[in-house]
Length: 74
Image 1 (tube, one colour):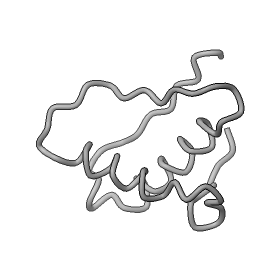
Image 2 (cartoon, helix red, strand yellow):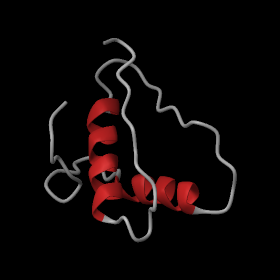
Image 3 (cartoon, one colour):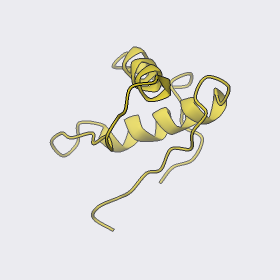
């Protein structure tokens, strides 16, 4: 998995607002089950996850949790 990829360096599909909404949801008082990001091969799921993790780690004051990426095919 590529490290340090972020929405600041590349966001050609303008997905940062989606990532920010996910962070708001996870940081809220709402009980959330594990979250799954689904899509066809090549739609950018892995890259989105990498960018989301970078965003969470850079904003640990608003997102007091540790994200985990699991590659189901490994």
